[in-house]
Amino acid sequence: MGAITHSCREEEHAAIAAYLRSSIQQGGNGSPLYISGMPGTGKTATVREVIEELRSEGLDFDVVLHFR
Image (cartoon, rainbow, N blue to C red; front, side, top):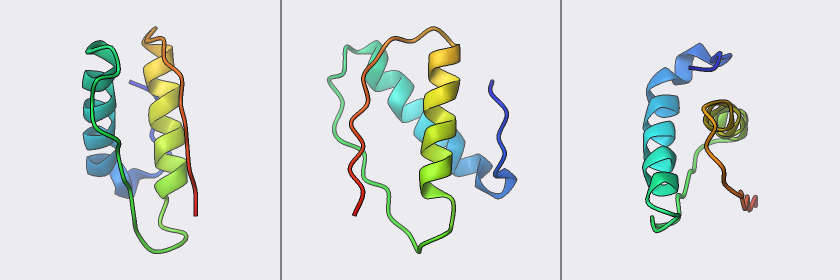
């Protein structure tokens, strides 16, 4: 597993990773993932860490990120 730099987000990191890993392994047939929260709480950093982790596992996928 990749290094988690936002230790207070370990549960969220694990949940996001499990959801995306499952979706990728199913050929991308999962539902979109919506993440919300107050600014500065680590949402973007956590998602980027998960993406890096999944790629280091050898999973091949494209990512579409939409920020507001």
